[in-house]
Image (spheres, rainbow, N blue to C red):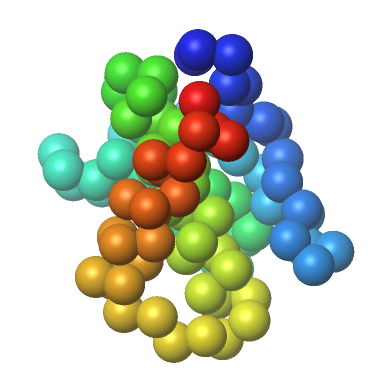
Length: 91
């Protein structure tokens, strides 16, 4: 994945979140999701590596939004994902 490996787990403020690949997400256009009640991020394993990385970033933002009760709208999360995904740090 261009030197970037999807981790098995991430920790946000002491909350351990498991990262899983799930080939049976609910809809044909759902690439990933954050399950706050289980502390799990699921990513579609059939996505190209670059898209998996972007989905992980998006779901991490979703988790931060939930854990800190920030109240970001989905559009704002998409914008943050686009900005963070474009950083050379993640390439």
